[in-house]
Length: 263
Ligand code: BTN
Image (cartoon, rainbow, N blue to C red; front, side):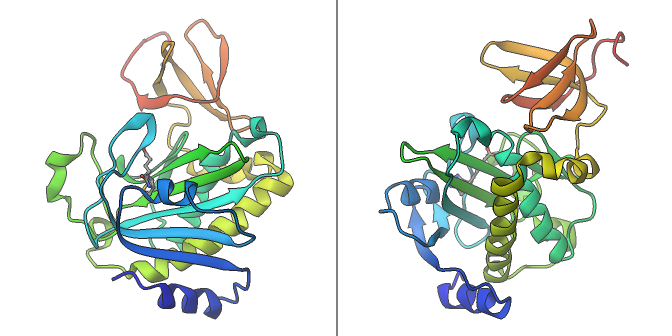
């Protein structure tokens, strides 16, 4: 079970001394919504739920959130910068998740698919949803499949996996959440101080799409081309079959088996 006292003990044991309010709830519509409605405070606000009744993914999708199995966790941070500088944030959040997984000994073969999917062997392990509020506060929601067994495939439209599937054993979510809070704090501080540029070399090592032929779906239509890493703002660099270079800030990416011109 999720336990606020154990999460706080883990933070203390790791000498994390910043003020943190941890809200642990049995059932919620969505941990992101909970934090959006919470009055501002000087502390790091974190909300974790055993289950979500309206867990949300990107593009208004549903996020499967069964009771007691996985991590559904959100945090709220204030950015004192122009919000246009926030591109790259979802990449940094996924990198913080990966750093937490490495610390837990499960980082091997985990890659990040721009802009936010954490994948293990082509299957989705974790996603994040970032919502900007009028106050310039940003709510960051993370869904990490921890102890779910993959026989529930029918409920989810894309291949997914969990830490249980990867390792064959169950994880204590309280320990993982404490580590996640610490890694997120470190990564967000680096992002606010030095920008996404300071993550680029690390990104190159975990970039699932690098050099691949891909399709990017955007509201304006699909773009196909070869993925060529990201720039200093965290935008995806895509080279289309005419050689034109596109810098993309949003969209959904998938590997494609297309165009001999690009291969
Ligand atoms: C995605 O990959 O589409 C993003 C998934 C984000 C899911 C998390 S679970 C915690 C938080 N609350 C939500 O309703 N969504 C995010």
